[in-house]
Amino acid sequence: MGLLFNYGCYIFIENRTPATLTLTKSDSEWGTWALPPPPTIAPGERVRIELDDTAGPTGSEGVIEYNYPTASQPAAITLHFACPTASTNYVEVSVPSWSPYLQATFTAKSGGDVKEPIETGNWGSENSCPRFGHPLAINVVIKTG
Image (cartoon, rainbow, N blue to C red; front, side, top):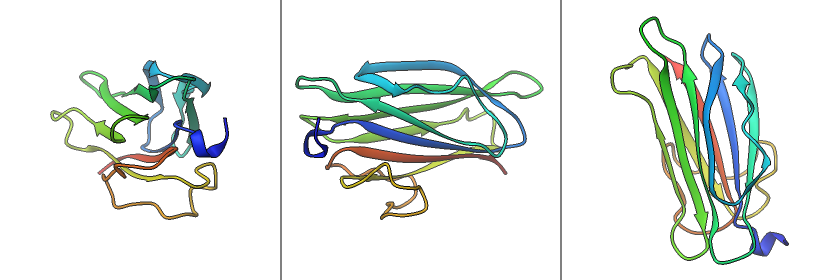
């Protein structure tokens, strides 16, 4: 598909924690993984994930979950995102409320060359998703604080 009709999602995840994150869920509710989520993300590593839209009226939507190891139980970091054709884009990033030291934030942008390096381009405000435009790019930072 040409860029004009690209309703894919391009996700960058950076692990700024001291521990390796382990993939526990990767569902493509709409679309197919062009670059699937890796099984682990090492400390200091930044990964790229691509969910392509499929032909038809849906666009793309997915859920990714990574576990952060803690002394008592793993803390799940969940990312739910979509670039639909007939409604608004969205991104939700969550961490367990019982784990106040674990933080996950995101910035997002839509349209243009979303495959450009993360350091360039017009990324939006923290934890805000552009409602319209396609494709959708999401930059997630996971850290402890």
